Image (cartoon, rainbow, N blue to C red; front, side, top):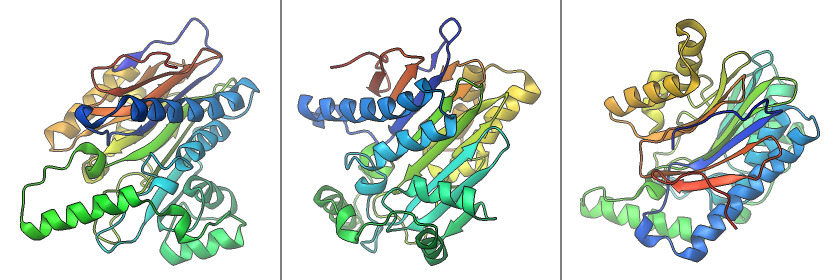
Length: 324
């Protein structure tokens, strides 16, 4: 499903993704599928609650992404994957469509919720993007909550790294599924005041080069919000999304070319695919229309329009639906 039209006069809208790094259908048990859907619903509920109380889109996307970071099923925060050196390096970004304010962190390990670290950069510094030790020092001084490395450790993610390192050592073909090649979480929202916001967070790719930074914290690529146009959060082959300036390109096509959200989002994802990248993105416009195009085998995703029940899906061919 690529687009969901706005309901008549929606008061607000929230869209989330848990990454294009989905597990192959053959390996997804009913119990695991239920857990993923439950995690998506919990994140939607967290953001929807903010919007229903006339809270800001910025607060809504922050809370939704933080909920996904707290869930070890998703590749962000507590569920982050390991680099080839056996460490975790997390990236996150937030952007406020009201005035273009933005904050991001890259290559960090320690903040319980990287999205809150990015929010702190936006609100308490003159910078847009802070990386590595400097970002950690700033976050501690700003009062961001930290956790020990053991909090983020996952036996499942560690096993995935060992499998990938063994594959590389043997010179075998890259037969990893999307779950190991890439994964990210994100949220976009329209609030009752008509403001847009976006947030994205990731652990990167299993076995990535230490120091590698993808599109997530690059404002205009993996994260973008612009009142009057749209808010975008992307997931997939980060290097290609960066080269296409994916988020900003969608907004520019709408603002300058008069394209509708679904048309602009699909066109940009098609160009990314033509350049050898895959993945997906979520977007919402100023009217509450949402788009969720995906070019990989799937993308964990969900939508909540107004006070309507959250709807979720995992694989590309699935329709968004209410699920128990």
